Image 1: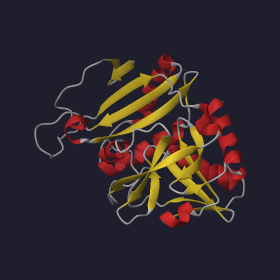
Image 2 (image 1 turned 45 degrees about the vertical axis):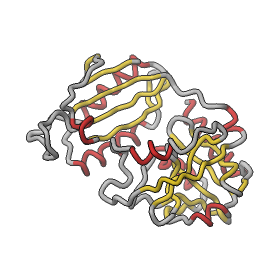
Image 3 (image 1 turned 180 degrees about the vertical axis):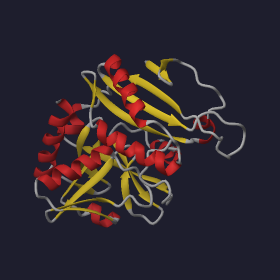
Length: 271
């Protein structure tokens, strides 16, 4: 594994880092192909919004230069960028001044079964519900305990992903994916203003669909609406699009719109 801390090769982190103590920070998981990042501008846009909302002051121009150097050395794989508020004394109060820490980890690209993209996946209906946290909603912050608990609910490899809902039962996302459904020719994905992660691939899918002239809605989605949808698919910055073929008693084909968007996204990932 390739690893840098604050721009230099390193394999250790101080125990006083606030990312370890409080989950005080953000992260991005970035696909790297041929030494270049996929959807980098979207990752940086989301990161900038997260830094603004968490009041972490970081030089994004210098960070981008560092990222390009890391991507070049990694070549092919997955780069995980972690930004923490840095070191701090015991207690919640942020240190003044703040000295954010930059952590970069490089790993091989994951090897997903080809059947996930070709035939679709089964979704596990997770019992774990997402808490409504408008202050943190949409951000890819370091506290992912809800996802950890949800992923621990199943071990059966027949389920490639799990469905996560909020405390009111609204459909939000997968454990590590965003979800879309198609009903009567209109595409919809969940409103993430209360909870959930605003994925960079979600943003790309919305843009591609709009370019195709497809009606796109970002709104609340009920569980029964999902079960009655015409098409359902998941998206993620590493694998692109997976059709959903089964959830509870509902079964779907990999429909024509899903396949069209899947091909567009695959060409983007492969370029």
